[in-house]
Image 1 (cartoon, rainbow, N blue to C red):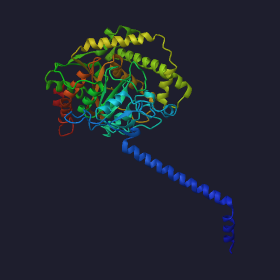
Image 2 (image 1 turned 90 degrees about the vertical axis):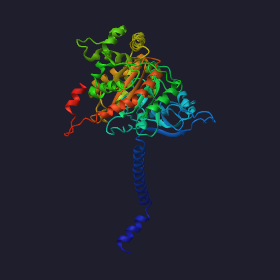
Image 3 (image 1 turned 120 degrees about the vertical axis):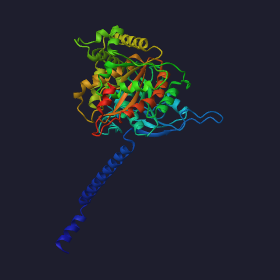
Image 4 (image 1 turned 135 degrees about the horizontal axis):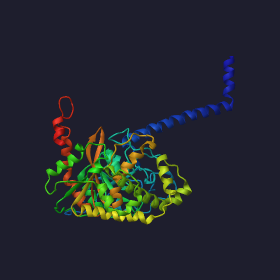
Length: 492
């Protein structure tokens, strides 16, 4: 036997050698399994755009036998945000910490049951900003859903997964909650329709609260007829549409906050109404000045300013009231859990949550007084036939993983537009208007509290004409690929 053979024989008889070999082999196998799971996870994210935290199927209630009409949502599939209860599933509120410290729901949310009773199938729960406290759609626990319109940019939140699931055509519609813009903003960023109902008209039984004075359960869809049907079912409305005259009011000062040229927004609305019967000529106003004159309790929240340019000072004051009210009620709801669990959250969410927990609001009554006056002011402006037209958001989606400290002004402009429906309790539909600089455009239509059917019927009535006008904006190009100067002069 050679020296090398004797050495091998000696090594083979040493149990420590086999232990080392076994550990090394196990390590290799673990690395292979980790890589396999990463590939599978990445494939899963690519398949569903990272929109879901849980996939399951809740079948609809049985169809009534003939000659009864088919249920209004028959054949439609939907998803729900992770703050809406389904019996025997843990509602995670967008956070693994919340999910680990709470039991499975004992009931299914009334809004979900309503959808099932009307013929639709639930396909699962979607990602949302942790604790419903973000507007970007980024999530530390589950990852950020991929925006189908702009994959390298945020989808918007907090109902991010619901918006992505609809925009990627994974479901026909989705349910989410809207507190400070949580449906309207991701609808805008993902290029779909988003409906925030009037406050209090949709049951929140089985829905985790963020701020009860602002929370609503709403829906998102890519098809206007689907949004119309779901909205009517959600609010238990009569589908018959009474004919009525409509009066659109365009908030010029708020459109000046937007980076999108008015030719792609205001011009589209005016042209569309010219082709429709029952619409008065749209009138224009400075909404900020109107609010400053009609919401007297807001004065104490206004910053001293020598300039009221674009009404931003008044609208910023409204945003302050909205966010202070959200902080106060969130703290009331969740302070005990936050302080005891100390959950690890994304940095932006964590800052907002702890700001709420550490805030001491001295004069809470003043917040509720502004809310009451705001509802009355909007009702006085719009009456029974009025709809306020504003940009849904002022800025395009930001890139993923951008440093948040740079976006104070973006947040200010965003909240300046989203606070109107939130504080007044009115209803709002965000409508896609094509794109500008490769980012989706969204214009919103707002009606006063309780005018949900009027608003849904109006959006469905206008939608085809609006999209036709959006399409014509792509036509007047000269041979150099630029918009013809004569066409621009006409629009001006």
